[in-house]
Length: 215
Ligand SMILES: Nc1ncnc2c1ncn2[C@@H]1O[C@H](COP(=O)(O)OP(=O)(O)OP(=O)(O)O)[C@@H](O)[C@H]1O
Image (spheres, rainbow, N blue to C red):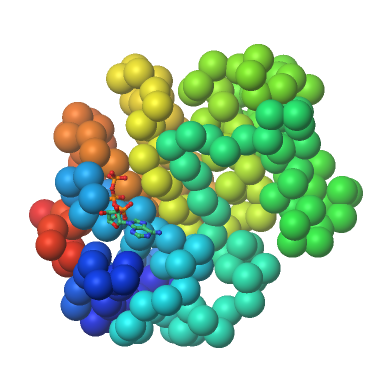
């Protein structure tokens, strides 16, 4: 699914990733852990193509990432962030629907899938609310639904529980793990949290000095 070989990335003269190798199979679940500044977000940004300047090989489903049109990448992968990144003036349903609209899906396709996923994560009752009317855990569940709307085969999560208390972080991770199985989706989850990694044992990559090692 994701294949990185000999990847180098620098910002100016600062080398962030060097000779990095990482393979994530279809349907696999893995954590990416590492100290602040070790390059975890940079790695995700290369995968969802917010950063396009790198050396080495990055392939998604055996296609070099630079050859995959952006809209196709959006269908292939969902992304969630620590800060949820919901649009404050749009309702829950409108926030979720946006993911379908940007890839040109008709409302008739968007609506049933949005309703199915909102129901699945227990948010049907708040679909007409605005993000600031929801708790942090609920906002992150909206972001998860938005990321899953196009049925991607891969979910990238950058510190998805970083703004949540321990109990809510546990619930969000539990939900992600369940969706990973139910939707048969690969997930790469960046986290600082030793606690979560202990609570949800899974393949874990540690990022150090620009490289990753598996533990
Ligand atoms: N656009 C940029 N331009 C220049 N330097 C950058 C840029 N983005 C990140 N960096 C630097 O690259 C290094 C790695 O940043 P990155 O955000 O990937 O680390 P991280 O492991 O995700 O950190 P954290 O856990 O604190 O989020 C940091 O030293 C950061 O200052």
